[in-house]
Length: 164
Image (tube, rainbow, N blue to C red; front, side, top):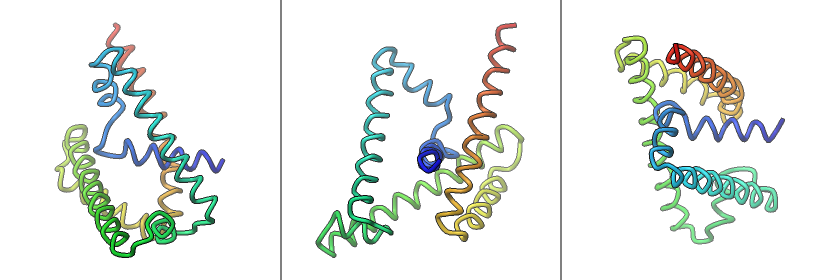
């Protein structure tokens, strides 16, 4: 079950609200035909290798937190600081993109003001993040299987409706 937690967190991170829906991924990769299929294989392989290598480093060095991970990868403290700032900027930008995407999705699907939708997600995230990383993992453990199921059901329903 431990590997499923990692998988759900990765899926939640990669296709989280606002980054890419299954339809967007499908449209992007399949618009290139067979080359797009190779793109999916290459992208998936790179992500898999990166995750595998990261977990291998963590296990080998008995790393317990991000600071230990940085210390293992980068010996110079100034470069560690710069790397940490860059990572934090990307995390913050990603967070804002996810919140905006969720707000836009709620506006599109339920005609709810995008700012209200964004505020709902932001409050939800604050509650989850206050519970630390375990809360983040737990929410992905619950939401991602539900998300996959709902998307599959909606996709099948739309596909059957479209064929009629």
